[in-house]
Length: 332
Image (cartoon, rainbow, N blue to C red; front, side, top):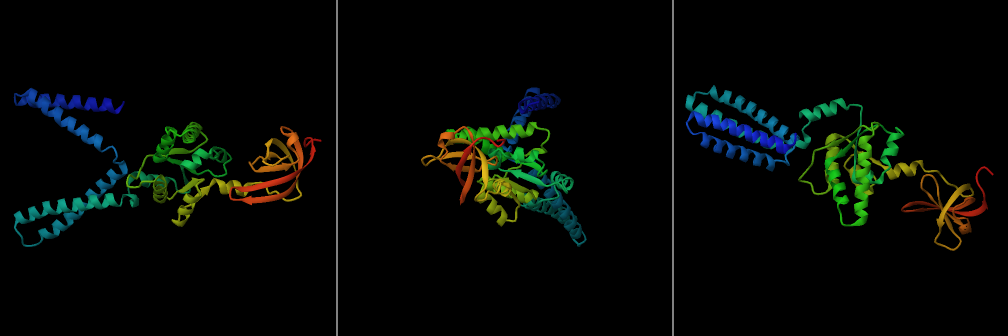
């Protein structure tokens, strides 16, 4: 059932109730009108509260209960004093209002640190021994998370925050062609992950409307859930480490498992395109490392044997330079 159907059904029921109540006082029409106005106001109030989270509501309820409990304790102490019944009754009402207000406000302000709320007790207790990894926008768009997860290199539970999906949708709707392609690619990868039964993945609905940036929301959620963040964003990883939050940087993983190339080593390569300098051709190793082969431009599209002459480290990673040895294939 959709929300529109539920709201319409509720309004219809409350109008019927209003009709019967109004008929008791011989004013059925007034009863229907009053019920319709009250129902419409309640629906409007519910719509305006759409940004309120279940966690915030449960925090407020817990705060109210705590406030009522504290007010009763204090009122019981006051009732032991030699005061009139009228003063004791008024004191109970005032204390209940004051402590309920303070309890609700304090619970809402500290809701992020509340670990006694029902949804999170279950979430944390059941996940003991099961680590949680939050996927950020850059890691999803990167596209290598599904392949890494399938290897069972890590079997953590993947959690995609709702605000990350919102950022992907914003990118997908962008007027900039590059951003639009990145956003659509990210949404496609999320859809791929959710449809694959091999992945233990869920979408987390909580948001932090007092935070502006997605990175700040991600750090806050990771701290709250005691989770790690999977990312390719170097700056986000640095900030997370400063705050004591664990990170899984895909670039670091790729660098760690990348094939180590040494000067003098011979490599069989498939040349794919021309290099920048005259006579150069470019090939790529299986891990994506680029190899520039001198004197091999005439062999583009073919398999060649090349000998490594130097390995250059750059900000983007390593770059390998090699000299052409001969044409052929590894079987020869």
